[in-house]
Amino acid sequence: MPRTKSLATLINHYGSEREFKLKANKISDVYKILNREIFNNRLKKPYILTRRMHGALGLFEFNPYATKHCYRITLHNKFKNFQEFVEILGHEMVHYYQKLILKQNSAKHNKEFYSFKRKFKKIGLNLKRVYR
Image 1: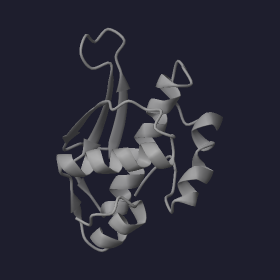
Image 2: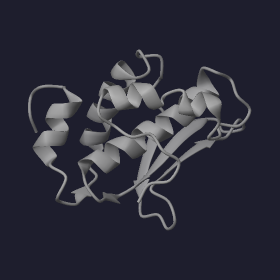
Image 3: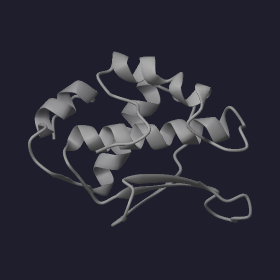
């Protein structure tokens, strides 16, 4: 992995042709970069789980009755490429922002969600509702 913490450098390093299998240390690095670049370091680190999923590549969950992990992001363990992983993590972070900062009852694909599209485009990512 390159020493620089630039998202563009990481995407170039991993390329777009090969499959990307998720590792815990990569999640943390990319989370920090996205939090800095898109959310101005306003998000706390939620519990992030990776597992094989059917019908989705990522999922944001909120459980107000949980004693340990109220906010949880679940990611699929394999992605088409590194950029797809970054876009999915960013997508779920937008839902987290909606719930944590904007205090919305439901973190849906609404006007506030799509208001982040310009910030994503600025760093070379796509923000959309459905991936693949």
